[in-house]
Length: 216
Image 1 (cartoon, rainbow, N blue to C red):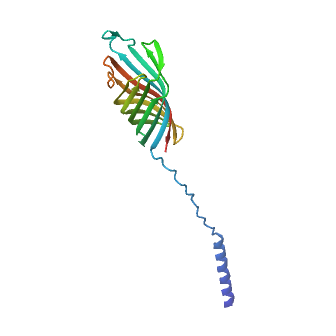
Image 2 (cartoon, rainbow, N blue to C red):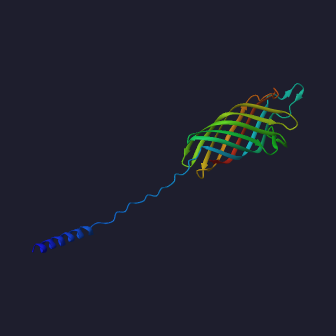
Image 3 (cartoon, rainbow, N blue to C red):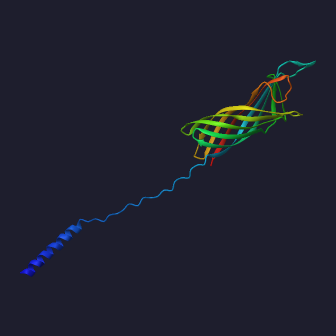
């Protein structure tokens, strides 16, 4: 009788463990996928563009001694190019250096009528502080800096002068690296220019540039 009781207790115990074991489900630990972070941009960028250059000068008198000046108001235009390099510290400020030069002959116009072409050249070297205001993929910006403008007249006469320069522009980012821009810069605007003749005044040099940039 005692053996029978022990057998019954053992069977009940085994049944209890079996029932309890039926409620145990395997535990799976989810494996999280590790995604490598995208490399950050360094802030350095370069660019190039096509520039439309303009130079203006005026004669402040109609004659010098016994010689009448043939042209009182002169304006020359060129198609040229600009290369640039800069560093963007954050979305709102950058520092940028630029060099621009004429590629074509100069197209001159005198007194709003008479015109001709010659081999005169215009160039500019400058460094700018570039404040920016981003709007999504767009950005409005200014250029405030210092530079040197040089003009070489065909037939003799090379002049250059330095001073404050400024500009305004807009840019658009196609990707994190590639962008486009258009801007207007005033290189020089003063009454005198280097050692130019005393009877000449109201000198102005400016440019409109359309180009692309690449950020590293």
